Length: 99
Image (cartoon, rainbow, N blue to C red; front, side, top):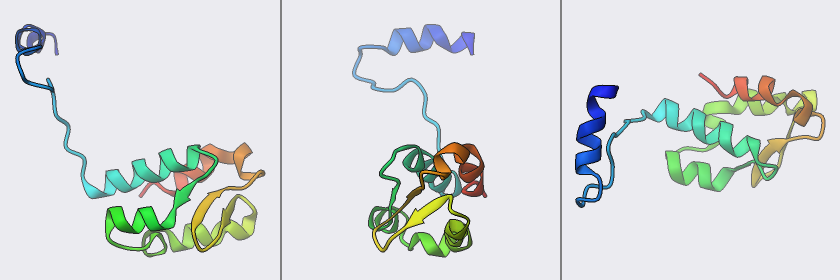
């Protein structure tokens, strides 16, 4: 919004560290976390997910993770990540983590 630019510039450097704040609800935070983690080869750390969101990833995406049988995901006790085959279908897999 162009009308806010002068206010932002005026506040810049005067102790205020942000010009705009966007609140992200839990649903969006979970989706963003999964999407960004799966883009990295190491994938989703199950322990980190549970610490951040207060529940195991299987509670939210158990059926998606079970799709590992299709060969697009690899899952262990510690993590979930794209398989070598899944790397070619990343956008399809990412879409499964959007609710």
